[in-house]
Length: 585
Image (cartoon, rainbow, N blue to C red; front, side, top):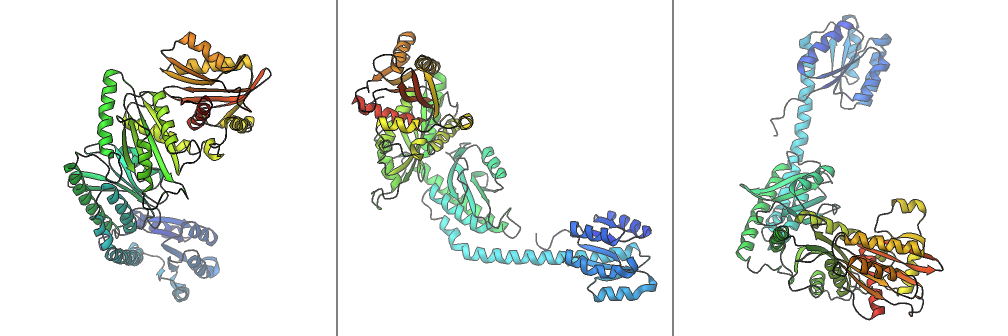
C-alpha cells in the first residue's frame, strides 16, 4: 500500500581500480541486499553502465590521469536517473569539488568506511522511494478522478434487467476502471453449474472460448496476457472477467480499489438477477425471442446426456451463428436475431430445443437424433435462412456435433459444434460465392479449383481436393467411403445415376452388400440436364461427418474433387434435390 512500500534494492556500478575499496563495497552491498557490478577501467565501466542502467555509480575520478572526472558526463547520459558519487584521494579533493559541480551526488575520500558507503546508499534509496511514492500518489489521484467520473457508469450496472445485459455493462466498466481495452465476461452456465458461458466480449478477444470450464478460461487468460477479476459475493461465485491490453497489465495498487468496487457491484447485481430469474424459471423463455434460455438448455441437455448414456441412445447439438447482411431488407424495428430465431424454429421439430446464448448465437438440442438427422436439420435451417439459395439476409454459420462420436459431455460437444460452425465461414461455398450456381456450373467451378501438390498436402479436410482416377478406381473409392461411413452406424447416401459404369452403380452394389437397414440410398438421374450429361456426384452423410465427391467422367477417367466440407455437401444436396424435384432427407 502507499506509504508502506518496502525499501527498493539498488543496482550499483563501481568504476574503481582499488582492490581494498572493491572488497569493502562487495561486503557492504551483500549485507544490504543490493547488487554490485565492478569495473576496473573507464571503458569497461561505461559498458556496464550502458548495459545495466544503475541507480548508483561510484567513479574514481583520479582514474586515467583525472579522466574519470570527464566520465561523469557519459555516465549521466547513459543513465539519466543515476546518482554518481566521486571517489578521490585526500590529495585531490579539488577533483571531488569539480565532480559535485558537474552534477555528482557527493564525494567519498579514500579510504572509505562502510558507514560512509551505507549513508550514501541510504540517501539514494530515500530519493528513489520518494519518487516511486509520488508516482503512486499520482496514479491514485488519476484513479480517484476516474472513479468519480465513472460513478454513474458503475451505478448503471444495477439497472440491468438480464445477466447478459449486466455482463456487457460489467465488461465496459471494468475495462474503463483498469485502463484495459479488452474484456471477456464469463458467467456460470446455469445455477450450480461448473461450466462457464461467455456472456460479453469487448475488444479483440473473440477467440475466447464460448463455453468452457473455469480452468480453460484461466488458461486462455494466461496465454493472452489477461488479468483475472473474480466476481463473488461472500461465498457465492458470480463469474470471471478477463481484462487486459491498453494501459493495463495487472491492476495496480491505485487501480485495485476501483476494480474491486466494480467487481463487488457486479456480483451483487448478478446475484439479484439470478434470484429474479429463478423466481420466473417456469417460463424458461428468452424475453427477446421465441427461444429458450441457456439455463434451460443446459438442464435439458444434462438430462439428455444422462439418458443417452444409460440407454445407449444418440442425440445431436448444433450451434447457429447469425449476423444480418447489409441491405437485407429486414426493418430496423425488427431485431435481426429475433427474426433469425423465427426462421430457425420453422426448420426444427417441436421436440427440439432452441436456446439463445448470445446476441447473435443460438444452440440447438436435437433429442434422439443421429448424425444423418442432424445434418438434414442443418440443411433445413440453412434453407429457411436462404443460405443455400444465396438469398439469405444473414451470414449464417451452423455446426453440428453428435453424441457420443464427437464428445461425451456438453462442453466437448459444444466445442466441436462451435469449431465446425466457425470453419464453415471459410468454406469454398462462401469464399467463392458458389451458392447461386446451377449444378453444371457448380461442378465446373469446383474442377477449376485444382491446387498444386504442395497445397494439397497441407490443406484441411474441408478444402476440396482434386483427384483424377480411372472409372474402376473411382468406384473402389466410393465403396471404401461408404464402408467407412457405415462403421459408425446408419448412413445416408445420395448419388447420381446414369447408364454404364458410374458412382451410382457402385453405391447400388454397396446397398445389396451392406443392407438397407444401415445404408439408406437415393439416386438422381442428371443425364438429361443440359451440361450434366457426364456429371458424377456422391454424397455420404454419416454419424460423425459428411463427404462429397463431385466431378465429370471423361472417357475412362473421372476428374473430380472430394471434400468433407458440410456446406459444400449441403449445396450439392440442394442442387440434386432440385433436379429430382423432391427434398433429400
